[in-house]
Image (tube, rainbow, N blue to C red; front, top):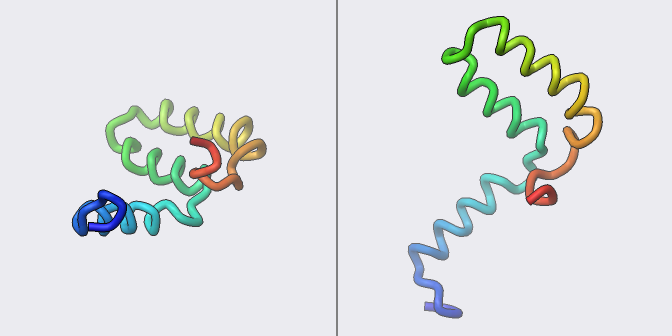
Length: 69
């Protein structure tokens, strides 16, 4: 147990860091959209993606997700 963190928690923290390291806002948003695409009506899904592409991705799409937290 180092610094009050057990081995299981330490491994979980390392896995979480590895999973988000290098991920951009755009990567996360596209994954989020893919996960909800089937639940939404096609016009809504298209509108959401269009708004991301037009308004969000140009501003913060390339930023690391950890920098936005």
